[in-house]
Amino acid sequence: MMNPSFSPFPQATGASASLQRALPQLSGFFPRLVLNGYLQIFGPGDQVAFNQIIQNAIAAAGRSPALRPQNSSMFQNDFRKHRGPWFFTHIFTSLALPALVGNAERIALVQTQIDQTRIACALERYRIFQGVYPDSLTKLVPQFLTAPLLDGINGQPMSYKRLPNGEFLLWSVGWNESNEAGEPGKTKSEGDWVW
Image (cartoon, rainbow, N blue to C red):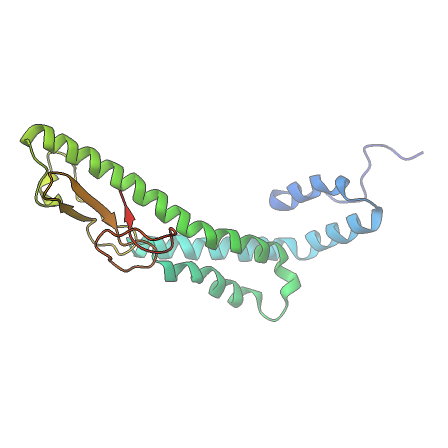
């Protein structure tokens, strides 16, 4: 009789361990053996490639204040360098990268919304104090904002205009990197991101 705690698979750590916890859900001994063999042979190299791609992305983000759309393709270019001619050696990295590229736009949009909210609050505080909105965002510093907030897409100051009716228009150039004077697009990838 076989010991119920016995496993023909060696213990793993990190991502390999979480995948091995899912192994019992695979039906049959052979698929489990093949997946475990892949994890033991190629898993560490796959994880190293993934970590290097993420480290390069973090380093690139540190060099530039802007989350530029063309930088999102950096993940794919980096992966091609690490992968070489053998696709099967980096299966899990190739499955994870499309999600990371898709998240770059969402991250930029959410950060822009946070920055626009901070600016809108500062504008409202200025209006309460002065009676009108300022002519430019520079008048908010240092009393209402510690520093000017930049557009996360192009690294320039957020676009702002005081309207004749006493309101204001606040926008980012958006994912298409084209300033359309505060005109939103039909999708978040088109037009400006307007507060």
